[in-house]
Image 1 (tube, one colour):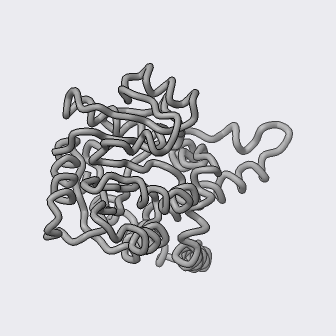
Image 2: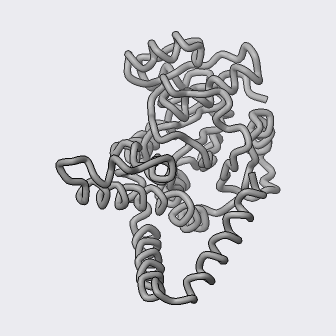
Length: 283
């Protein structure tokens, strides 16, 4: 399907993608572009076969370019990518927001190289090549910003590759993705940050109430371990959708507060239980 892969950003997502491709496609050459120490770790782990010191070298000969960088840096390098990508290349990103990136790419990729927006709906609360996992994409939805019947063979080949990695392609437009991701991905992250702030601020010099926290609290706060550097650009580029989601959450919390001593609270639990069952069945 592809003969040479360039991975721009060999951290958690880029490193995991490279490891997965190596596992499922064998000896395809994979060149990485990142900081020197990160590339050294990526080579040591077997994620990449070559390390490129400069941008142009990484793209040379690559017919699949995988961008696993923060949104802001992706937007910054897109013009150079459009200039230097091979004519037959498929360039795809893994950014968590799609509208800004895809709109920018539409004005830049007007030659033979093709840009395909993407977002793997997977990850960890920790970042870095040391946490990369070849099975990270297994069972995960993988959003592609294109039509399912896109006639470009490169797009269809990438969808086939994702299925080989045990991911499930989903075809959406950029705006729909950003609205949906704000609710099911970005809002839970901010909720974990807010909850962590409440627990931290309420904890006194004896360690209470934080020291009483058990598995339930740890599960709720797992996302609180995510680094700000990963989420800064996500919040900036999906601000409107996130603001609406936070408003909706605030309304839901106010709604619950008015029903704390009412039997109507049972209905809220029943509705939540039903959604939980649906999500369990979707695993």
